[in-house]
Image 1 (cartoon, rainbow, N blue to C red):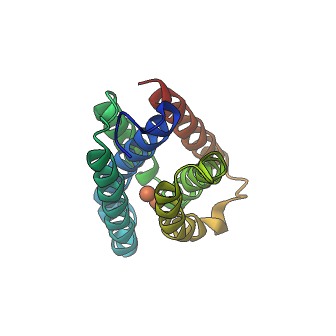
Image 2 (cartoon, rainbow, N blue to C red):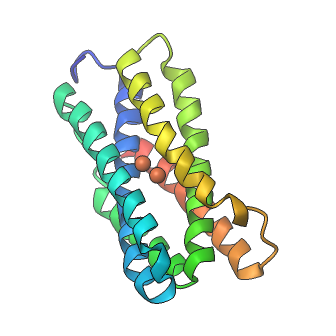
Length: 176
Ligand SMILES: [Fe+2]
Ligand SMILES: [Fe+2]
């Protein structure tokens, strides 16, 4: 498939996934930095997730390049937004970092499952790539499972912010 044969809606989905990974890298980069102060034992885990996101970005990037599809115009905004979310949640240490991971990855997994439905029978290469990546996104989400239902108010606010920011970014990137 090339840019001329790849349907526009599929081009958009590829672009939004690529952008999402770009944003995820921002989150984990900032959290890795903050975790040194607020959750030193967690630095290794955050770093491991960061390396996964780099792998995802490379794979979506490779598919974009091979098909001759441009990336999202708003990429710097994704990185900045991700970084801000990561820095804010990193201040709260283990709970903030893991709850943010839970909220963001849950939203991402929901989005990926929807995409697979939309792409089934139309773009098996893309579907296979999503299925591959979902493994790691699920593992990321599960690290934060313990904090999913926390009654702590600041953490509830983080949860709402992380979910809203992710959904907003996805919607924005489907346009640009
Ligand atoms: Fe990812
Ligand atoms: Fe992830």
